[in-house]
Length: 269
Image (cartoon, rainbow, N blue to C red; front, side):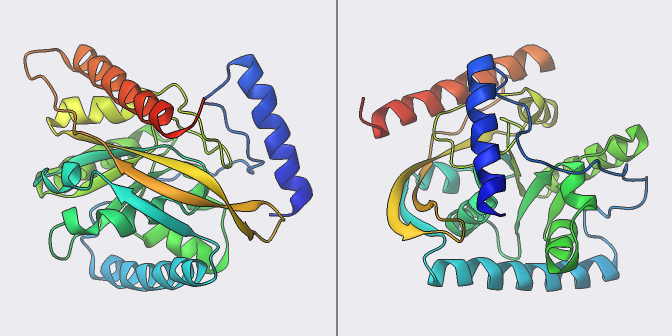
């Protein structure tokens, strides 16, 4: 991303923040072609899907570990991991979304809480699945990603796949703020989707909030690389006595409060 493009994104973040448009996309993405039914093997059942997933995860690990070696991704501290390891079954993992590498920071730190031969699945937007080229396209399509779709029939496959994955004990990362805001530190209002999944499929939510500090390293566009402080917060369990929507709203409010409390405890006023 050229510095001029990133500056436009930062200006748009400031504008949207002033307008209260906290969940709107600030990136300059091209329109996405709808993902068609049968296009995504959400549970990685086919042999070809397993092979592509192996290649994608190899590429992804090499890419992000190289960023770590070059101090372009700095995971400074991890706290509260016991909150994740205590959840032995399937769960929704929520995290604030501020950089393309934040999903790897979660995956790298949550590995002790994953079962053997389990990966962290990531829900991504449709354009991330359709628009990239080259090695990034392979990672976006096959590194245990679960793309959303504007096609209703494809979303039925998405929901079915999510249930299968959660039933077998997988952890699925969802960004409830919806859009990525580059290096934005404050918690943004949440969308209910992640919590509806948790309520519908009766699994807990593991909230993660990543706090940041400027390092003395500059990224390729001249901005300070952020030191990441990955905070695993207490798991939020659904109340089976409540209807799905009410249950989801309650879980969402609890998640947001945990994020706000963590933000206020970390950053000086």
